[in-house]
Image 1 (cartoon, one colour):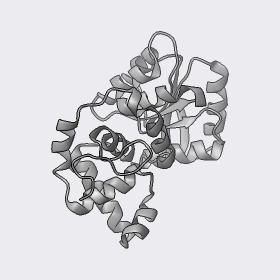
Image 2 (cartoon, rainbow, N blue to C red):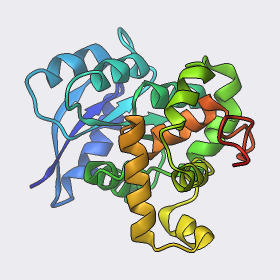
Image 3 (tube, rainbow, N blue to C red):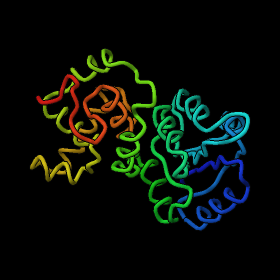
Image 4 (spheres, rainbow, N blue to C red):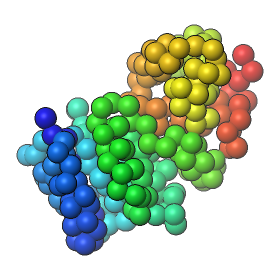
Length: 231
C-alpha cells in the first residue's frame, strides 16, 4: 500500500518539485495539496493522508498552528515541518505542536524520501542530533510546560528508561545507545517504546522536547538539573 502524502506550501513551484520526486516512488503518492494551513485542515476532513509535508510561513493559517490543530485530532497523520535555516524557531514551535520532525526545503531527495518512510513506519526519527542542536539554540526563547508536571511524568520511568531517555535526548540513535549501554539494539527499541507509552508521547522527537522542558537535558546536550539528572 502506498504512503499517502499531502503537500502544504503556498509556493506552487515547490509543491510541483516535491510532487515530481514523490511520484517517481513506487511506494508513495501525493493525494492532496494545499496552499495554506486552513485549506490543509479542510482537505483532511475528507481525504485520508499518512504524512503531511508542512511549510511554516503561509497566509491565513501558518504551518505551526495548522500542525497543532491537525495533531490534536484522533489518529492524525504524521507531520513533517519544512523549514529553512533562517526559520529554525518555527521548526521548534512545530515540534512542540506535535510534528514528528522537520526537514530543510533544500534537502536532497533521498533524505526527504527516507524521512517520509521513517515517520510513516512509526519511527518518527528525523535527524535527532539536528533536532537537539535546534533545541539547544531556541529552547530558552520558547515557553515551557513547567517543570512540576514534567517531573511527575518522569517518575513513571525506571532507572534504565531514564538513562535511555537521556541518550535519546542527546541525539543518539538506537544503535549508538545500545553500544553505550552494552545492550542489544532490540532491547533499546523496547525501552524507547515503553518510554513513549508511559509518557504518552508520539515519537522520539517529543521525547527530546520533553527532556528539554523538564530540565533533564540543558542547552548544549548535557544532563541538566532535572529530577532524574545524576541518578
